[in-house]
Amino acid sequence: MAAEQTNPSVLGPPTTLAWEALLDLGTGSGSRVARLEHAVRDAVRAGRAPVGAALPPSRQLAETLGVSRWVVTEAYGQLVAEGVLEARTGSATRVAASASPRAAASRTVAGAPPGSEARVAPRLPYDLAPGVPDLRHVPRDAWLRAAREALSTASNDDLDAPARSGHPRARAAIAGHLHRARVVAGGHEAVVVTHGATDGMARVAAALAADGHTHLLVENPSWPVLRDVAARAGLVPVPVPVDADGVDTAALVAASRRTGARVALLTPAHQFPTGTALAPARREAVVAWAREVDGLVVEDDYDAEFRYDRRPVAALQGLAPDRVVLLGSISKTLSPAFGLGWMVVPPRWREAVAREHGPTSGPSVVEQLTFARLVGSGAYDRHLRAARGRYRRRRDALLAALAHELPAAGVRGIAAGMHALLHLGDEAPDAAHVVPEAAARAVAVVDLRRYQAHPVALSTTIVLGYGNLADARVAEAVRRLADAVRAAGTSR
Ligand SMILES: Cc1ncc(COP(=O)(O)O)c(C=O)c1O
Image (cartoon, rainbow, N blue to C red):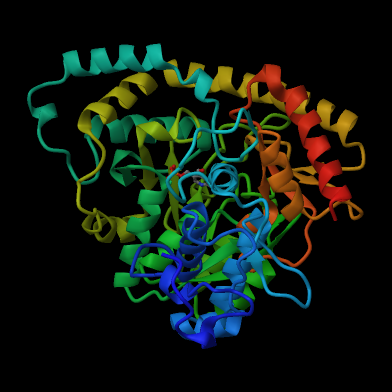
């Protein structure tokens, strides 16, 4: 498909590729930036864009594709960060030497936030990608026992078509669990069973858009999947900076005034990816803001169950059940393979959210009843306790290995969850070079820029997940990572 040069205006010398033909943004899902990234990755992976091929200058490509220049610079920046493209001052951006189709495939696994795009290869053996729980310890037997009990005790009526908001027993079990574990307010009537946090966000965003909302305040950095889902529903994401106390609430209020946004998507218990908990005064400030503007907070409570050094922070929802939609799922506690989650919805939004149920009414009733059984029998709590212990021990082993292998690096966001931020140090090589070097050593890590609304030019911070790393591989993974950092430094 490497076409002859047909339209010189889109081609940066000395390329012979007609990029406008290669990069069909189409009308697919995701933001334009995500679609352009995907199209370039695809062209590289399929071998249509060979190593060394120059990309057109951002202004030209933007004109040809009918998008803003920002879209192109964002996509180029991300792909440079991933090692798919390389940029040199004074020269065209090119397909990177390390971007062979095979390398690009493993990078997709390593670099993409889980769930944001289909995985194309098995996970790397030294999996330090954030967002993945310990897939070795999915409680298969407990789930099977619960499934057997749920199915054998289900009435005929139970096995009728799923209700839009979920099966009453699943809703009640989830409400009870959230009340005990997260101090969430509201009974079963507040709970909607979903396919996960992403599904919940899509439904809330659609309900908000139908109600006339046009903007969504989002943390910067943050998990791109939820903000992309909201953007697809028509809500323009407005980034708000995050610091050591969580989202900057003064900046949030200012952005709300500037744009008229009255909804914020936040991760108060454990900010993704910085790992901070929202400071108490800021929790109050967020609620006060939501009340003042007649707004709503969407609380992504994604891995709040795992906190090690202090007691868990209760959900923000408990402070203001009328102003907060809580999103949760078992993607981090069990596995994303189950596709089961929930949202807790204030009365004012229940009908609107129920209307936005998508093409299906919700997850399989059998799975819902199984999860209700797992919770009711205490097996879910037992699993959470065991998982918490495992993750804490693994985190400690990871910290010890990092102190030994990368003593100049600083680690942040370690009090909870299954990932940490590793600041390699001001003299360290750029994370964009470390990620591909790590992948070449079978280690998956992610450049922090992956999560930034406007990726910064220079960054030496990477995100390390330890959920899915076998205990026996922690020391070797860190040794290989240190090796990758050294190699990235010498190839500068
Ligand atoms: C920040 C964040 N929120 C939520 C989720 C869970 O999303 P879902 O329940 O749709 O799998 C993830 C999963 O990786 C995540 O990283």
